[in-house]
Image (cartoon, helix red, strand yellow):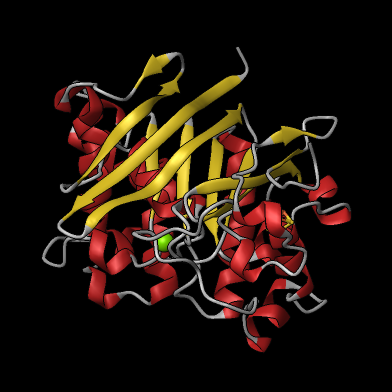
Length: 324
Ligand code: SF4
Ligand code: MG
């Protein structure tokens, strides 16, 4: 099948002293082979918790309370730790916002990438692994790759560290790469280079990517399909052109209105979008539509009834009372 990942009705809940936080609340997402999908929303909307759920890295008091995550038809929910370890970094890998936290400060970066490769290829010789890492360093545009192989993380710039992380994520040629705000910590010029590189590599390796971001400019440049999340729910889902040309959910509309025209770099300089009002308290969600306190179209029914996600045609899905 051409579907690499299929998430069905995933619920990731946090059981805190103050109550249950439905961080991911019944979402379904499908990732096709060789495509880049975007998950977009403000911080706290559940997009990072979705990616950590896929990686089976949700820590207590959080847990997956329902649903399934099918990766090549295998349900990752409930997979043993060792089965998951053999997939992670190998068939599914992830890059985060801050590479410093995922690199070990006391080991040369090249060695760390080689270890990922050796972990998943038990018969590979060290010399061969080293050569493959140096080739990958070249591929991700790290200058003087032999010298950088021996460098420690603190000896590299933020941009080079992120390239090392991309090299590590791709060294086993994963089927799925999850990139969670991969460029947010970088300056705009480096950001543009890293995004271009990711797109290039995605085409060469034919990896599917889940791009998690709060930046719609990045979505427009990178993604084929988009899921807009709000307060743990998918509010809208469509093909990227359709979403930008015909946004249907008032939240998406607000997101789009608040990005200035222009490219990603300009948007970043001018500041990111903002919609009036605050994201809801996840311990005390508004009744009815979760977006109603911030929605300028809200009517009485919106304060009572939680709308379903409905197909408005051609797979353009919207969760709003205006579309029944
Ligand atoms: Fe706005 Fe009502 Fe639609 Fe929610 S359901 S987005 S409050 S119009
Ligand atoms: Mg996040």
